Length: 223
Image (cartoon, rainbow, N blue to C red; front, side, top):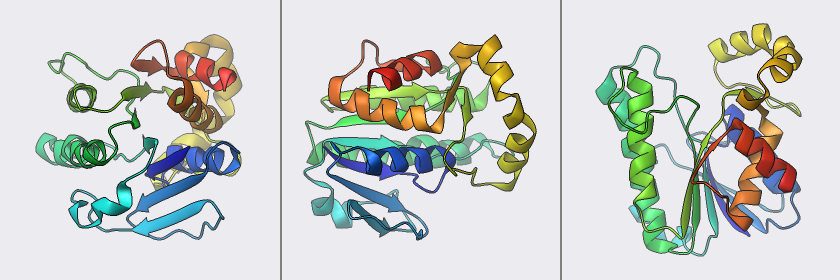
């Protein structure tokens, strides 16, 4: 399987990249990032682009891939809705349209979040925008598209949150993971499981187009 990965510098993307590089069935990973990383691997090719919203100049390099794992995202904290929509929905759909035109047999997996509003009419701005993004992706001509909606994600194997405020949150909440897993197991997962689940779903599909944490964990076990 040949994979394109967006967001490899974020917490989820770090975990997904790790699992892709470990999986013997993943032949190659093309990682598109805004800033270079120090990661080196025989299966990994990294392309640095400041502007990911327009990939027209490199469309030929995006052909021949089986799956796209889209882990790129930003927090809505402090953002106005038009700005959040531009960097969440508009960028994602622009990338997805380009990939669909070059890879009609591709499986596209998008990392959204628990609480996403598929109706697009709720009070929560981020949930509406994420819902718009999911709905638009499901209409594109991919062979298959799946929406991952994880809740609390435990970073593993040296994966660290990208932003300072997330590092602080995980420093406080992280030690409570065993309690959360015991009390609300359907709302928690790990970076390892998200990565393994993406690979499994890209290979075998899934019963539903929208996967919550418990579905992600089930796909992880099946993988």
